[in-house]
Amino acid sequence: MNESLVQTTGLTVRYGETLVLEGVDFRIARGEIVTIVGPNGSGKSTLLRALLGGVGPSAGRIEKMPGLRIGYVPQRLVLDPTLPMSVTRFLGLPRRVTARAAEEALDRAGVPGTGTRQMSALSGGQFQRVLLARALLEKPDLLILDEAAAGLDQPGAGAFYRRIAAVRAETGCAVLMVSHDLHVVMSASDRVICLNGHICCEGAPEVVAEAPVYRALFGEGTQGALALYRHHHDHHHHRGQDAAE
Image (cartoon, rainbow, N blue to C red; front, side, top):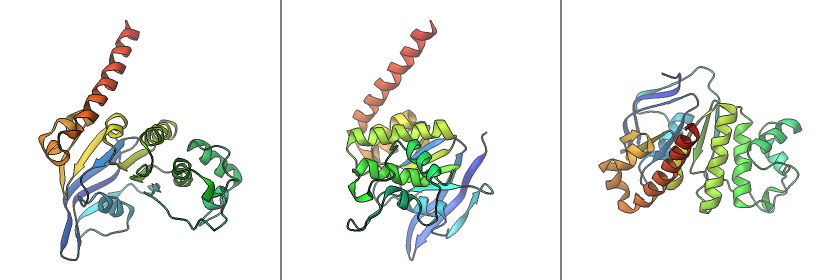
């Protein structure tokens, strides 16, 4: 079994009287891409906040690998559009980074050469990639993304998640993402966790998509996503077999 970067045991989180998460046993290993799906209010963001140290457990425990470096890409970040701020300057907040490190991070995030541009002039997709570049400056063992492609159209989201997969391949970091985009989840994840206050089901994407509890939460509308995934998956599988012959 690969080394665990983060592991929770019986994680329970309350906000006042409200029970948001209960008895969550979760782990992510080095190099793994794990996606959390679940309806609104299911505790997805709370789980991320607990892993990031922003909210403490009411019960249970969170164990992190010593020296674990986490890069975080938020769902959105609102900057004052009247504020002049170049991409490079933004990457240097709160602490300065070298021009070379900034360039490398932008390159890896798929927006090379944008360092001198104004943050306010970027498209939605470019802005999210700059946020990704900023997270990559941490040289993370674990990259956490909270619906980081929520504001992008489907091709933009697909391209963003392909970039994430490339980052994992290049750096060996693990990736934990919360996503609503089930099409993308199916093709980009090693493991999917279906959360609704507790873990309802988890496993390989195709296994979770077949689970009755997943169907109950997401309805039959996700069949399209699954058919797309199957087609994509089978196509690659057969192509691989042809090549092998």
